[in-house]
Image 1 (cartoon, one colour):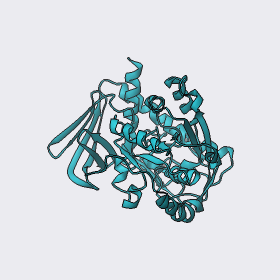
Image 2 (cartoon, helix red, strand yellow; image 1 turned 60 degrees about the vertical axis):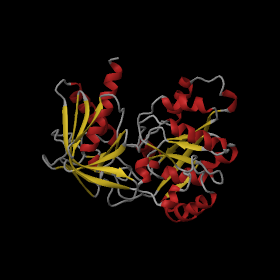
Image 3 (cartoon, one colour; image 1 turned 90 degrees about the horizontal axis):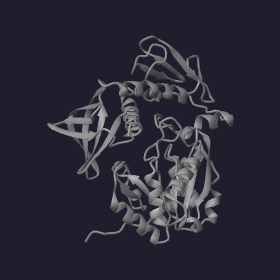
Image 4 (cartoon, one colour; image 1 turned 45 degrees about the vertical axis):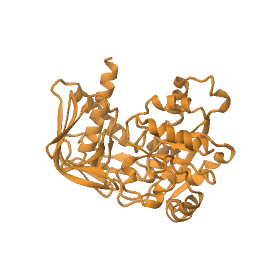
Amino acid sequence: MANKHPRPASKFLIRAAIDFYGKTKFGKKAKLSGGEAFRYIKPPYIVVANHASFADVGGLIMSMYPKCASFVISVTQMANWPSAIKSMGVLPKKQFTVDTSLIRDIKYILGKGRPVVIYPEAKLSVVGRPNPVKPAIAKLVKLLKVPLVTVRFNGNYLYRPRWADSARKVPVHMNVKLAVSSEELDTITPQQIYQRIVADLDYDDYAYQLENNIEIEDDRLVEGLENILYKCPECGEEFAMTAHGNELRCGKCGAAVTQNKLGQLVGGKFDKVTDWYDWQTKCVREEVSAPDYRFEGRFRAEKLVGKKYADMGDATIVHDADGITATFAGNSVFYKAGVFYTLSFNNDYVYLPAPDAVYRFKKQDNVGCTTKLNIAVEQQSLLLEEHK
């Protein structure tokens, strides 16, 4: 008979992971500080943390030990992780969906006197600032009736931005805070909990880098950033940006900027990555607001089957005023506008959960198209909320 309960994290495996990954890999580049407060907080409790790279996973594991937490993770990650990691107490979940069985599993782990870690952004930060956090996390904390600990990482995104293929040597600082104590659980409201979470997890890693004079030595400073900054500020062309070394260049008009060791952009309209991204967001919002808005992209569909993704053939994703339609192998999956407030994506893939499966769609053209689709979904959701 299958085990009806999740397996708590193994202290032996956690210790082994710290010795191997923490000391030999993570610890060599990320100079971690600020996690000492965990020594004085007694479990069970819920941890909510910002999520800008997988350094925050390593940072929490190392700082919380010998308290071994269970991490809520996406089922898409389960497909990529070794069997040993799957035995370390993780609690899998489909992103951006309601999962009552997950609540049952969290209660079980808390009942064992263990902490549980949740990343309320549900995906990696796009530009070193918070992704949207939904108020539902506060309702969950209130329901679970255990103290809440918030952890804000600074430098986590700089350590390895989502678009980069390697880590950089940077100081990573943890701000650990008992956000809701045992004494407050009966009187605090979900709205108050939500306000504390949003305030405690607010950060800007590029501002942190500049304020702390953190110089990053890397001969490929911006390679991969063209996947996030996909629109040329000079000529307005989309998906024509290229990156080499520390230079971003438009393939259409030739306009170029460089990034210095302090993360600042030099030689263009924007001196901050975040300002460039905000400008792109404004442009997409204007597009989405138009009645004839339509995004269409070519992808390759894959379906998560067991531990692997099975190829499902060529696919087309269309996003318009009605929502998202993914068509592949004679099938069509539709998501009504507003169903998603954000998307799970990376440089190459968009992930879409369905009632009976998880699909991922690999882009076949247009570097940066996954980022634009994510922005469009977020802005459409915001517009719908504003018009209610």
